[in-house]
Amino acid sequence: MTHSDIVALLLIHRIHYSTESVMHSDVTDLLVTAGIEFIAEHRFSARDRVDFWIPSEGIAIECKIDGSASAVLSQCLRYAEHDVVRSVILVTCRARHKAEMADLPTLNDKPFSLVWVASL
Image 1 (cartoon, rainbow, N blue to C red):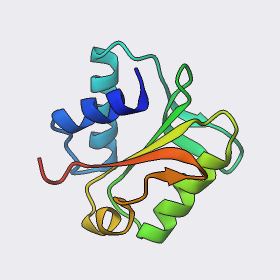
Image 2: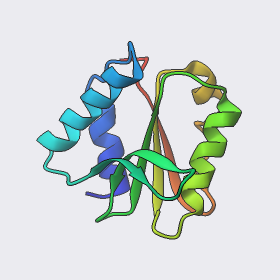
Image 3: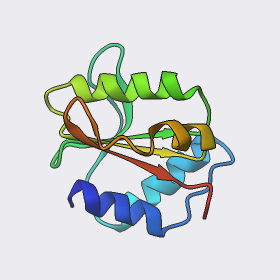
């Protein structure tokens, strides 16, 4: 599945976000049901651990229910710095993340998408 396919999958399903653990569980269920092979809590480095890594496509998926937009953006930018990462998807319920990052098409010249789940 491509970056766009994964974004579409995340957008058409309800993802609960009462806690980050609940959000992770819902994303896990979606990926498993879709037959997408992934690694949860994958370490790119001692500092960088992404919530979901789809190695076949080089897609990093990060889930956030809190945190400042600048801190979350910095984290996603760090992921995009890794050569193996071809694209980054942020799944969030925070309006401030959406307001500050929804219009970013790329991070480090790699596709970036924000999936805002609070509207579902």
